[in-house]
Image 1 (tube, one colour):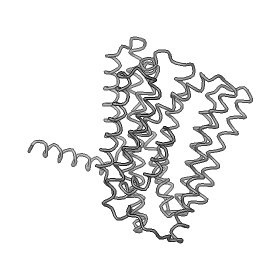
Image 2 (cartoon, helix red, strand yellow; image 1 turned 45 degrees about the vertical axis):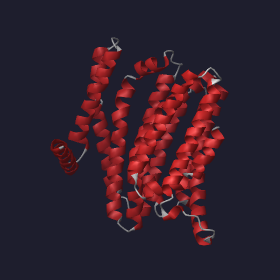
Image 3 (cartoon, one colour; image 1 turned 120 degrees about the vertical axis):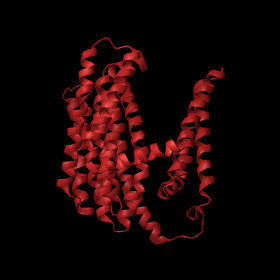
Image 4 (tube, one colour; image 1 turned 135 degrees about the horizontal axis):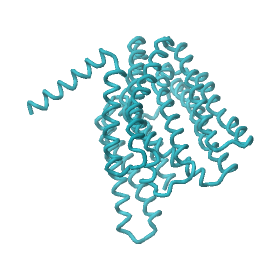
Length: 378
């Protein structure tokens, strides 16, 4: 069933890409909501059957995936790009093949790094430790999916502006996207970092050893990796990605031998995540240097932006930490919900007052006021 879902996912990549390239984000979001709804329905259906629930779950998920891919195909028939022509453009095939090949190298290095660390942990520790790491990455994937939903809407614009020669406009969009992506992750991650033990206790009841520390380190790594998305798109916009993928892929894969060395020396399993964070920082430095070469990224401006993001994060964590310290061990579900609400409100206020520029604040005020006026007229 997983292979069937994967097959249809691969086949539907061009159709998804066309929807993103044409910036039809309304359809994209509707399909995302539909996918989430179908998964919930599949889970609820398990209560209605007495047969093997795992098999039923796998079959229903596969069917849901196939139906969604067919829906994408049916909708995209209206676009000229999806109509088949039985001819081969060798120059285009070579161009796309080279780009896809080097992109695949980068993806393989990331995949090998992720799965290789799982193998290392199995070699040196028990499967319970690997389960703790799996839970940490499950939480991280939710955060990443949330940010990617926003990023999908911006990515076509970065590529289009580079293609049309609007380099200055593209650089500005890269800065803005970096800032907004980071703040989206920050809003989710800060409260989660602080009250993670309580959240995991509610979710899992019996929390495996190392899970809390693993998850906190994974969240920190996810925050850092969020900064790479806009730079990746901008660098890859010119199509010449051979050296970029080779260099960043090599840096990422170095996590494996370095982690193995530390584990061999007797370090705890968390060292693999500390190494991963260091590798993520090093890979980001490489991206900044490539961005300077490809589209003239102003490194000073970019570092000022990163400093501002860091300062905003430090200010945003003060009140959530103080409230958590005051509450100490009297956390109940109602207090937990109240804490999250207060933390989110405070973080949003800090981002509004400190994290964005005066011009961005004025633009935000304009859109909010326009929405309020529109709502009043209704």
